[in-house]
Image (tube, rainbow, N blue to C red):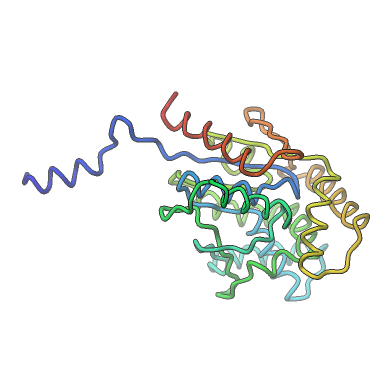
Length: 278
């Protein structure tokens, strides 16, 4: 073996102080701030961000575009299988829209915190995620209110969840990834090395969502937005397949009165401790 080969091999061997690249699961209800926190945590760690909820939103958008009713479960299941097997939904690393489940207000707080000394953008990974449907960037289109509610409907269909499960598991199989959704720690990766369950009171989550929609120029009322949040909570938690719930070994985090940066710092510290095997 030449000296050059020995040097190349040494670069690929895990060093004594090298951190393991873990799978980090972040679950929680709509509006809890999962998108903002997951993006910030991925940037902080240099991990890839995978918003699994966006995959279901993409299915909902496809359902909406072909004109299927939300209760046509057989046809929706067949469409989801075609989308998955045909590679029609793809995720790309890149700058995703600021609109997330957390709402514009929470995302703005994260941006302010970063500008005041938060973690810099990482060139390694975690730069965000674009969602493509048949090659079209639909990262913004999947955030429309009717598509959000549709995502909750389609995610309750067993055939849809089965079709998309392999796609989600493949995205995080290699580690070094932050996955956020509603059943990551319970179904998709029950053996994830780190699990968080991010939540907040419904009124706070509705206010974030309301501020987001208003900022996008939509005419909505807070009361209607709160009703939508409560309706989605009920649908997500009572569905027969993979209902929203906290995994037994997940760490509960309340984002109600805490800044995104504070939560990101806390999560990153815990992930780094576990990555060292402590």
